[in-house]
Length: 516
Image (tube, rainbow, N blue to C red; front, side, top):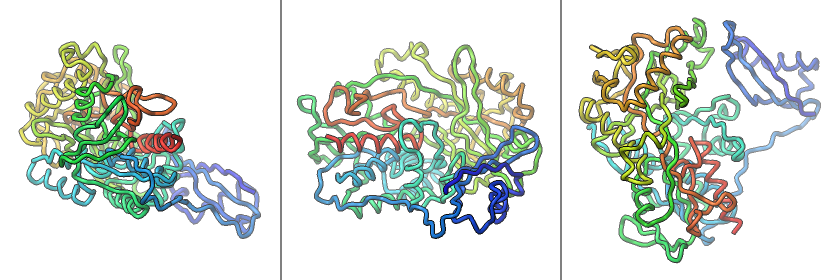
């Protein structure tokens, strides 16, 4: 007999894992000897009241001696000589599309403009040392995509799009800690995710799949509205009829290539803003009501959603115990993002804080047509660069000074290794962004005492929360609405927002291709 048992425990009792069986049997009113198997299915912290509780959900097997839990399986096949499907981009959408193609008996051939994850780590280290960006290998480009060095958060609200548990299981199968299966907000960590990504690559290669690193796709060759091949950066042509386009939201050259070839793309809403950083102790104190979390509770996070003048202003990609990192892809622009290691033990907490951008905000960029949003993004990033300290040194301002529209004469310590410099962000930021963010911060701070700490700063700019472009596809076949054999996929195509939803979209696209 399989039962579900929900427990609400103190942080102390929840931490005593060897006591969980006792709590379970007490609630079920059975003997411990009757429990054949039990497993933690969900864990979350409830800090809504001053007395903090930990909620645990268990699956318990009762009176079934010899019960053995099902193992995570992967239907690996030898697809060396199978029909080929090109996958452009080795981020979560591309990698999980490849895994699904293998299970369905098709051969993925991946093309990644960047390097494998180990070489990519070297280039990222060079970014911090030299403040010079490799435009093909950085925090956005390379094996694993932007998420590899952006925390590895696996939380999504997109459960209707696919099997979230299957994505988490595949991460576990390839080396992620099993806690991603039950944590309410699962997280691998930027220190551990590269090895998981490498293991996924090795499995794909073992099955007969192919990786082409340092290989940018310059052009998708189309004839009679059908995909006919790919023109690669080395000048060669790869002949193929089915292409999964999973290039991520920062590959602006891909959007420009599609637009130049009259392959339909559409503008869509997006959001931009800043990174907000506090000492982690400030966020812990707010969220845990002064309770000293010690080793019993995770680094606290927050979630802000405000409406300002009919627009959403919200926190994004919260990184408790994390770092701010440079996410630009070319020189002359300043972009920041956040990440956390698996232990989330940095003394800082950061989150994106952004406002939605609408079509009416792009009046000055209408001459760029459907690419107006891209150009506005680029303009915002160049403003940050010219108002920063040069190189990767980012502009920053104390939040209280931003709200009061005054200069920050000094700045507190930061996790941003490349360095920050005081900047009057309230002066140079586009009005629609600056006003909305300032108003939302004031509104939130009025009901959250301590958020406007003197040590709370904003760092510019957080501009790549999502793509301002959607590549339209048929909702039934997932093919591009005009081009047969082209399958837009993931965050860069406008159909996902994060690691898990991108992975699900990749798997869904692979299933559609296999049905042909």
